[in-house]
Amino acid sequence: MKKILIEGNHLLSGTIKIGGVKNSAVALLPTAIMAKGVVEIANVPNISDKDAILDILKKLNVNVTNQDSYFRIDATDIKNTVIPEELSKKLRASYYFMGALLGRFKYAEIYLPGGCNIGARPIDLHLKGFEAMGVDIIKENDKYILTAEHLHGADIHLDFASVGATVNILLAATLAEGKTVIHNAAKEVEIINIADLLNRMGGKITGAGTDTIVIIGVESLHGAKIDVIPDRIEAGTYIIMGALLGDGLIIEGVVFEHLKSLLEKLELMGVDFTIDKDKITLNKSASLRSIDVVTEVYPGFPTDLGQPMSVLLTQASGVSHIKETIFENRMAHTKYLNIMGARIDASLTEATITGPNALRGEKIVATDLRSGAALVTAGLIASGVTEIYDVDYILRGYERIINKLSDVGAKIEIVEI
Ligand code: UD1
Image 1 (cartoon, rainbow, N blue to C red):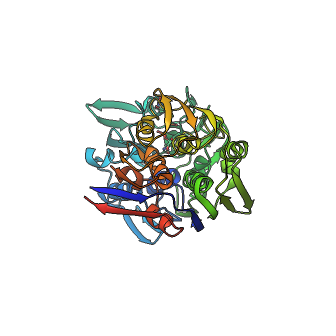
Image 2 (spheres, rainbow, N blue to C red):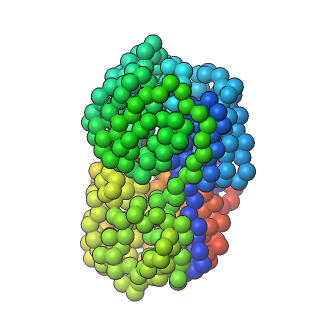
Image 3 (cartoon, rainbow, N blue to C red):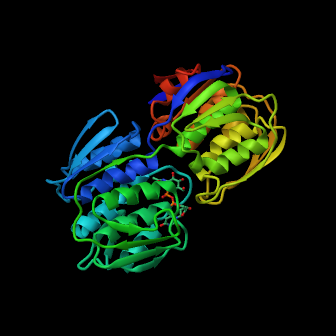
């Protein structure tokens, strides 16, 4: 067990470099097993969710070598064995092995995925999509046995533009017979990254990044190379920290096209920032204005930035609102912000934040990945020392967060308890 200790109120200056995006990396690594050849993936972030995927690849006898963030995946000797419960439950994205194994072997055995506790998170849309493609699904307690005697294309309409369901159907459809159309597909930029790898491997996919994706199934896939795109959520988190504490803080390696919804809100609040190519420079503002935020599917305001954003809003003058529309429970962190001195009135999906209120260091607990990021942000602006428990959540998705923040002047450390 580890905890994070932060001595707050130190300004941040210098440069933070953004890594590859978690949500692409955890899909690109499973995608690689669909190739009969070597797949090379560069810019893989060093996060514990990536390690959990590597454990599953090892279980499947896939050969993986790496040098820093560059990975070489060779699934020539892959063995399609059941993915055990303890590995599936380590992360949400383990479910991408359903689509990848179905595509390659027309058969997969895997347990229910894990992931952050931010709502019910069913996988019914993934399963409905597979069924439409001819997959027979048997559920034995938490284990799914997926078999396709004839994996074929289908016209699939998603009731909700789910990221996970879109990617899983995309994977299986790439090696199915015939044409699949995904209507109301998720448009997140990570999906373009994944479709790009599949196309480089010999897939025939058009429309990724729009709400209609068309996939013409192919018989087999070959080796290819891809770069993981920059992490817009990691960038957004550090940008919010810079808005609170920047003293010329530079965040480098950002694709601003992916963060328009955040930048529009920061402009409305009066955050002091300038953009130059892939860099943004931030300075702490003397005062910030309150605003309303509604989380939405891409290109709307990302649900994954709602929690860090709520910390920024505690420092704005007036009353702000956040409405979460994607998950059922993304407000657990507000209880801890209130313990630190914030004034937030929250239900499971809405928060009314009155500010500005100075925060003070307290003992607090991360309840999921992005709540953890929010609490780190709060600790950085609090007086005194903040102690954050259950920090494994944070390490799932923010690479070298302690080093990246220490390097720009934060007083932050992680210690064993
Ligand atoms: C992914 C991201 C996560 C991000 C989210 C929304 C990964 C590994 N995680 O999660 O960081 O917060 O997108 O941008 O990429 N739903 C169903 N049935 C399904 C699938 C989803 O009802 O079969 C619901 C979910 O419960 C949720 C909503 O749809 O309320 C969105 O889920 P989805 O887009 O699938 O998110 P994830 O892929 O789990």
